[in-house]
Length: 195
Image (tube, rainbow, N blue to C red; front, side, top):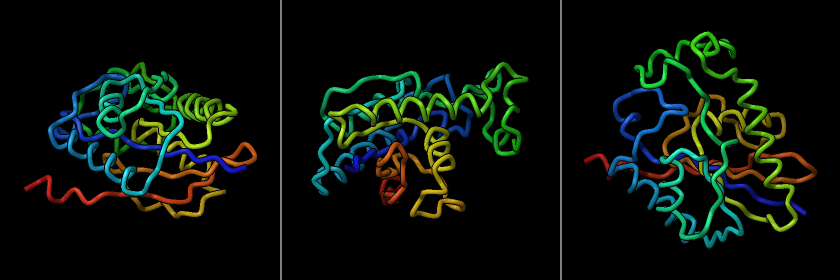
């Protein structure tokens, strides 16, 4: 029987607004980020999506997003944390966009992307393998979402190659036979929040 995972990125943070790298370091949600989380929560209610379990990265920005989007108990999981960028945490974001090696951040005391991918995939597999988990919400980070999308792209029904992962984007994965299939990407219209 197919199970469903809704994987969502956190709302806008102060570091997003300032175009700074944030992995294991944290920054609070902005007022826009809080409203984004509420809009995502309204989407779930409008589409009558009911979760039997919810999880969040241990980062405050993910927990706060989940709490604003969904009124239910949840479990914090370190396995859902963003990539550790080492001493580049808090630096200007354009540094990260020039990286094409998976081990780039290791030289700065950060994490190898293969290690991050392994922990993310393992964490979400562990969650979905539980017998009482039919429809779950996991709130995490752009890097977590990308690792899931890239790892399972051979089974995906959605082409994500040219798409950006915006704050509070939602990725719907079907989980069947121990594999994830990306079936839908939900992006919200936040244009009214920036006026």
